[in-house]
Length: 325
Ligand code: AMP
Ligand code: MG
Image 1 (cartoon, protein in one colour):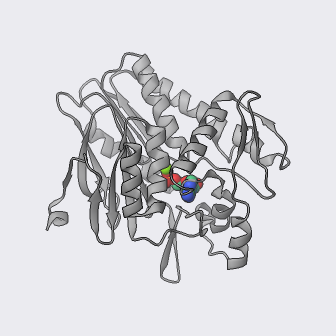
Image 2 (cartoon, rainbow, N blue to C red):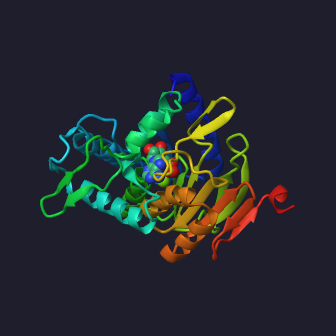
């Protein structure tokens, strides 16, 4: 992201956060994990520690930072076991679980396909034969927990935790805040919102970005306490080519954006890692299968689709007036 754009985004985030702030609150905003992160709580030491923790996680899990575990895995000879941190092994195991639980909709090995689309580099529409070659690289990561090693068994295979790492970081943030005795806080990791306790004597109100409107416009809000509210949106990282919008969420069965009318999916769960993996997966699965899967896995989900807004049982959301008309 260009520096001036980045400065504007960070400044806007600070303005939005100012609306949440209460007396005694300390709020800090940084650009990390490829997104704007803001953490607000009434304990400066705790908030600063959270950013140290995010930096540690980024250095461990980013596919784009040399010396990270994921970098080491992706740079290894295929079929060769790579020794990694036990934390990396555990998160990769969780990613494998969400792949299975979502019938392959969540798949960290879509990286070769995402690379072809080159969203962060301005966008590229790949040829069908390039796509089918990249699709052949999708596979299961081999994990040896006892040895703390990971192997990519297929030629051309590569992994990226972009669909789950922010949720994992959000969980470590709330853990860090709680270990410092924080009883009320909000952390926004680029669309992954985690809250601790209440905002004063009320639940936190979390606005949901309207997929077709400028940033800051919402289509409704949910109330949350000690929960994560995670949104995956096709409007987030995208590019336009010949009048068509292409975005960053890939259906691993086609190598393309899902064509199911979904514009955004919000998942509400106690566990941020789960909410992050599932928001990406449910987007791919579409409304009907997605709602069924969310209910089976015990999370709440909201689908903004071309046909309206739909949600699982148990969602208590307030829609803006125009959405209810
Ligand atoms: P999110 O914003 O959490 O929905 O994650 C989207 C990011 O996850 C993309 O920028 C890719 O890096 C990666 N990704 C895209 N499609 C998938 C998928 N089907 N499963 C897992 N990760 C994906
Ligand atoms: Mg995700």
